[in-house]
Length: 137
Image (cartoon, rainbow, N blue to C red; front, side):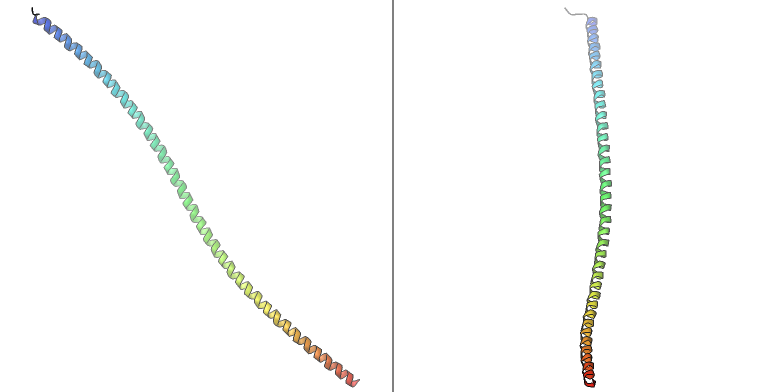
């Protein structure tokens, strides 16, 4: 025999209510999972942002170090150029001094030649004087 339609409708209503309650629990559980996933994503994004910030800071520090090194290399290059110029000037001075010393040596050689000639002349005059003395005496 068939049940009265009011019983069927009542059970159907209860089944719908139970299904709705189950669906609500599932939706709440799903919403909780979505919220937890969102929190995990937010933490992960925050962690990645912190990592990115640290990497940017490291990159900035490396750039600053590279800039300082570049500046120091430039200064060293300038110093080396100045040293090269000073060495070149010293070389020129050494050449000038060498030329002056060589000139003085030539003068000394000429003076030695003159002294030799003067010594010979004095010797000749001494012999002449001696000869004159011997003749008058």
